[in-house]
Image 1 (cartoon, rainbow, N blue to C red):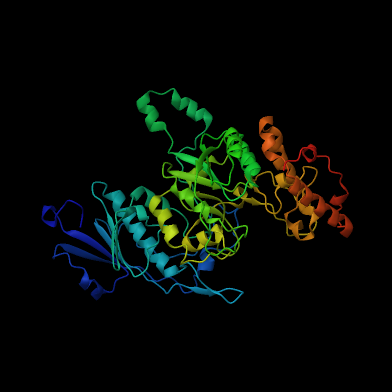
Image 2: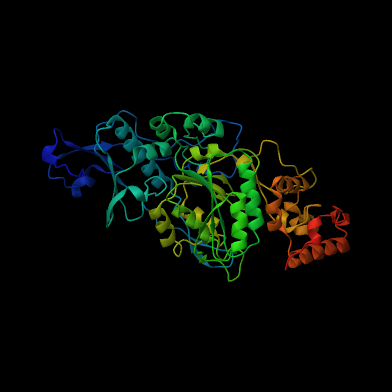
Length: 504
């Protein structure tokens, strides 16, 4: 029932739309005879439409409209005047997948029928909410599984008891979501009004105070996370500098655990980051001392509730062109990975305390396919929005030959393999390991060093090589020389002056 308003105070019947109900299934909905029920008919989804077709690994990005399978929705304009939309949500048993080692793991829900009913409910809420701006529209799910948190935010949940879930959706937020393609079968649409720039901000500052308040952008920031090791401090400094060089107007936030020293914090602040200290989070499925043992620390980005929207970027990126326009995309928007998965190296998200709590509560239930944050997030968030591959250029070259170039139209470079700052500038030392040749590119390597050269000189000291790192580089180079690897990079003499100023 609508808050603070009894049925007797209403001038008309309480209109309830029923989605996915048989005619007799509403008998347990008792509104004391005050309701008029509207049975909402939706054609079933074709059995030919699978999750893999909704979330294909590759699409033709040159097609601006894309192509997605058609999922039947309620006819617009046919179901107006609704106060509540009630949906019976189909809940298949959660999938249990068998890993290559024989272990079982619980996986996320990827059910086309569940997605159809959820989207249909969202469309009805948005249509009735827009047409009836003087009253609130409510959503009720009857289900023994969680409704899709990607569509119906936990922030909008009013009450949950047993199989009943009652929401008062934010119509504008939900409208953004229903405008998105039904899956990653097409590129997502931006909901941006006018992306910020320093020129626009300067113009806004000249307006009267009352108009300035209207012109201000939502609270938005770039964010990265450092934990468990200082190996990525230099990478984070270069990332900040590369973002600032694009003339962004947004904040830069870095979450750091206590393993990041006070000295490094000063360097990160000098590079442009605002620092927030965090306690790290152990990855339940990672092996002891594995590289991803504490990768769940990344989940703390959802705790930054002082911001409306964030762009998370891993600290092994550099940004080549302004990407402020990404703030116009909804949670969760990301570039694709393999199969139906997204890559968590760069993603658009909306901070929320209850969403963070939800992620924490499920971390022992849903098992990450790779032991880290990317595998986990892909099990919890199965409905996501595709950003172009140009926004997350993976430094990965699986074809023999070629020039291994970073195309001019790319927005970022994601440095897979051995990182540039853990190598010398003379050449990409991924060449020194044959199994790492897929990550080797002198052109991409030079892109990172261009950012290094443009930094204030006072930041260079945070990118010094340690004696251990130097020894590793020289040992790999020596092995490449003995193996006479065909690329011949081992013949190049190291001239990087950093080799003469090593630290302990």
